[in-house]
Image 1 (cartoon, rainbow, N blue to C red):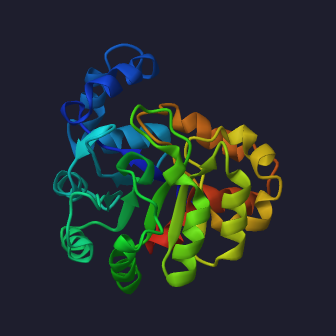
Image 2 (cartoon, one colour; image 1 turned 45 degrees about the vertical axis):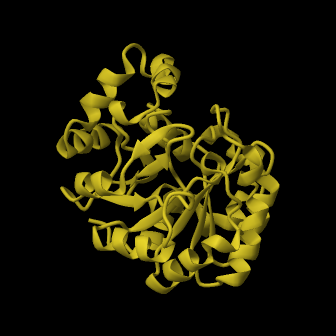
Length: 276
C-alpha cells in the first residue's frame, strides 16, 4: 500500500513572508529557517525526510501568495521535483497576476506539473468566478486535477468568505469531468457542505490536511460511505509529525481497506500513479 502525502509546501525560508517564519517557530521548535533549509536543501534531503516519516510520494505545492504567505514559483518547484518521481509538483496560478490562465496551465504542465493548487482565501477570488472558467476548461481537457483551499485560515490577509466549498458546486456542474479536491475539507464551518459535495459529485474529493485524524469520525460520521473520496495530506511544515498522523489514521475504527484508500490508493488514482 503506498502512502501519499497530498499536501506538502516546499517554500524556502527566503520565499516566505517574515511573519510566517515567526509563526512556524513554536512548531519547528527553534529556528524555523534552519529546519526548512535542512529538509529542503536538496531533493535528496527531502526524500530522506519522507522516508523517515513513512511516505512514498509527496505532492509538492507552489504558491504565489504575496498578500499572505509568500511566493514559491512554479519554475522552482518543478525543478525541485524533477529529481525523483516520488516528488509530484502542483502549480499555482494567481488570477490577479496571470492574464492568460489556460496558456499558463499548459506552460506549467510542460515544465512537469501534475496538478494545480488554488488559494482563493489568500488570493481573494471566488472559485466560481467565470474569469477562471478557461483555466478549468483547460484542466478538464488535459485531465489535470485542481485542488482548492477550503475552510478557515487564521493567517493575516486571508479572507475566509472565498473558501466556502459550496461555490465548487458551480464548478463541478459546469465541468463534470474535472477532478476537484477540497483541501482541508471545509475545515471549521463547512464540514457538512464538503461531505455533501463529495457525495453528490463523482469527481470531487475530500482532502483531510490539517484535521486531527482522531476527530475524523466526529467531523464526518458517515466517512466510510465515501471511502473512495478521501485523501490524506499533512500540510508540512505546519505539521511535522506526519508519521504520527499516519499511525492515527491506521488506528481509526474503519475497515483496513478504507484506511488504505485514505492513505494512498485514492490519491494514486487521482494522480494516475502506478505505485512502486
